[in-house]
Length: 410
Ligand code: HEC
Ligand code: HEC
Image (cartoon, rainbow, N blue to C red):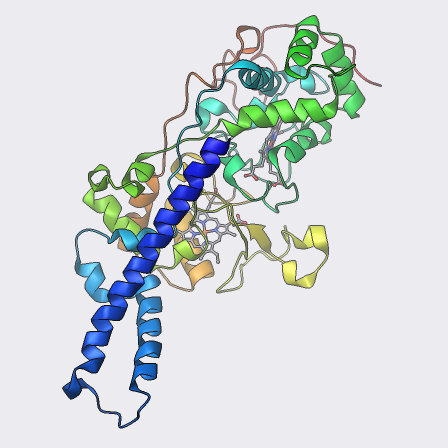
């Protein structure tokens, strides 16, 4: 953890250095231009002051990607990328940390954490399918009833500043108890029902004791969610994008680089940036132009009842976004092209043409990382046997080997 922290701090420092260096360069260049006597027409003494202001303006303009000379260049100046940060795969854990991850993984795949033993976290966030419920606008819960929002990916979720489309859970651990007791998700009547099942299982008891030693009864909800969150923390998917950010400019194709430029020039990076290409702010859906559907889901307003939160949602991560459709909080957008077009129109106020949309989409594909196949290997007894075949009506009810049904809570 401290390793990660110091690596992150070092990265931050590097990014700041490049930014400062860049601004200094511009300052010098502009200083030369301003101080050239022929170019100075104002009789004021405060030439330097004016020059300073102009430098700031120019810096800002270049910063937001408006410089046309830059666009003509083939490679994007690394300084322009300061708002993005590379991620790396989680270091392999050992000892108790590894056991905690194992426990979390088992819980993640265990359908017995749902009221009728039919669905697990993995039902709606399939780890072999980039952590979503592919093709489903909204996921169905334990009894087949649809939920209210699209299932977001669990990959790289831990890098976000808050969880859920409206950010109502601050951390993965805080998020994790929600689905088990959610009446349209896993439907458990109360935390006790979950704990009762875990207590009845000798294997789990052993694991909990090993991971949380010194507790009279380690099988408490706090530990259940802690273990799940530890497992989820390892669900990170670095991609070619990260190699690129680390300086290997050959890993992106010319089309992808040009897409990145279009992405930045279109103002997408004002919301989708940082480690997760999102996940670090809320924004109004319809920031530039009123979103057509103001009724179905008012976003954070439902949570805070503050008018200024109406239609505000967490800016989602764009990592793996090419694989996580259908898109948006309601899953109503069927193609990535359409998602990008809508973002252009409603978030940035620009009507992107087909070429620009294609260009951005090709860049977004570079954000697709590798699924950590070994890390997500389900414990043999819980492996979903027929994950993709049972889409639709009878989902997952036959996908799991029969395990003895635990006593349910009342
Ligand atoms: C029935 C489907 C379903 C099940 C089962 C389910 N989830 Fe979810 N999950 C969702 C939906 C839908 C959302 C978004 C809800 C919202 O934002 O209001 C979500 C949100 C999340 C998020 C937040 C991601 C983000 O980017 O904000 C995480 C993390 C998560 N679930 C993990 C889990 C875990 C862990 C489990 C098992 C304990 C689980 N889910 C079970 C459907 C499900
Ligand atoms: C003002 C902030 C803002 C800007 C600018 C912005 N976005 Fe978004 N983006 C969001 C928010 C908020 C959402 C979530 C919308 C929802 O579903 O409620 C989102 C969602 C998305 C999604 C769907 C993600 C998913 O998992 O469903 C894509 C793709 C996307 N944005 C791409 C872009 C592109 C490309 C641009 C530039 C043309 C852009 N965004 C500009 C805030 C922004």
